[in-house]
Length: 88
Image 1 (cartoon, rainbow, N blue to C red):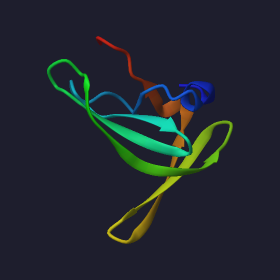
Image 2 (tube, rainbow, N blue to C red):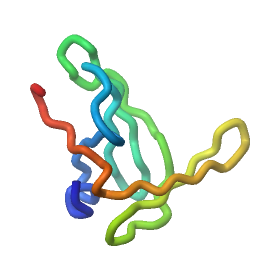
Image 3 (cartoon, one colour):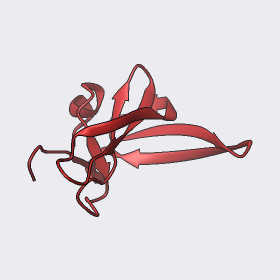
């Protein structure tokens, strides 16, 4: 995935797809959202917040969220994000 595809909000996996109906993610207005998908036809059944984005670099994005009151930071390289493709 490229930075432009990420910024455009294209759905993606972190790493590779593990199973049919695996969650996908997308970028929207400085947040990353998670899409829970149906294992039958992969349609989106739940769309929810995942993390806040605070850095959009040329090769990576940095985000954070809170888990049980503790701030957790992640750094995702665009090259490790795999675009979701319908019907695959």
